[in-house]
Length: 433
Image (cartoon, rainbow, N blue to C red):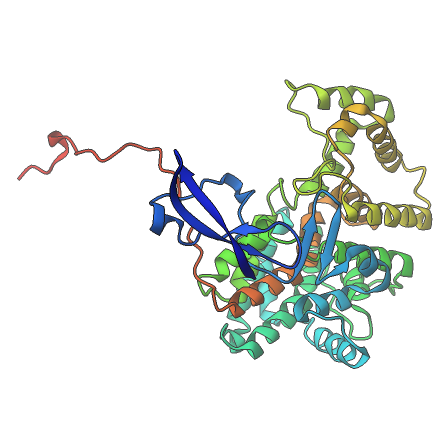
């Protein structure tokens, strides 16, 4: 980051102060307000941090107006078409796509760390079988630091790299275990002969009764879902990971904080909400009723999976996920399935309705990913856990970048205080001696 220009603050023609303007390689410039309070006695006010750059980063860039998403400068469309999820993981962690030797070593390291400590399985027995998988996941991932405390020196790049590999490798195993526990089925341990996604699908969907043969079309679909969810700049969960990491917390605690934040319905729970909405609508004949409810300002109903906080036009991930959705439906012969026909008709109507067009409420990645995951046989209560599995690498990349930043300091937002001013406690509340 550099600055050549300054931003002038003035009142009634009187100069208050000048603040430097920082600019990156692309995107909006930012006003450096680090000295604002010192020089003016004032803070900025920005609820939700919608106009605040909390850090500098080289990992992911989003242009919401143009519908652009770049990982380390590479368009998401090209990565989803030409790369595997593990190649994207390497890219996010290291800044460049791997050559064949680097990829072979990286895949080997991930594969060799997919097992979890056997005593970790005891944690699951403490939960009710009907516990939400995210509740279990938060606890189990958070407990990893108790089993892998040999590499917790966050100042050591070697230790950070070891923790990154362990998390990317073990989170899918834990996600699958959460599902198996909630269904009462035995855990399926990873197999080193399988690829990353094949391994996960086997652990998630197979049983000891039969041999499991991954369908390459479905494997590729899930691989693409993970790529599209791998990172998304300074979103709520990533910002939470950075904030937790700024205190010096261990990587497992930081990633757990991201998982907990992702659990929120406004963030990672959106694709689960899409399926719940479709089940509530129930039939194509009821779509007009729910379209009208969505347009009614006095009605609490909202169409889930449409519109996005950042993207003001089409979510670039949604285009890719839409194509993947059709590939999966075709492969599984599900075009006549009631739920999928309902989703596709809702999509068609929304894309043609002037209300949604004017408000730029296009289908987002959550609308299609929920449909794909459902088609793959993954229950809706596992959708957010699947999201967390894909996003883990993005969280780790941002955590590592933050720890490596010489300007890093503990996060400490300020506030606009609107409570009571200083006052004395009445005498009747004092101690009687």
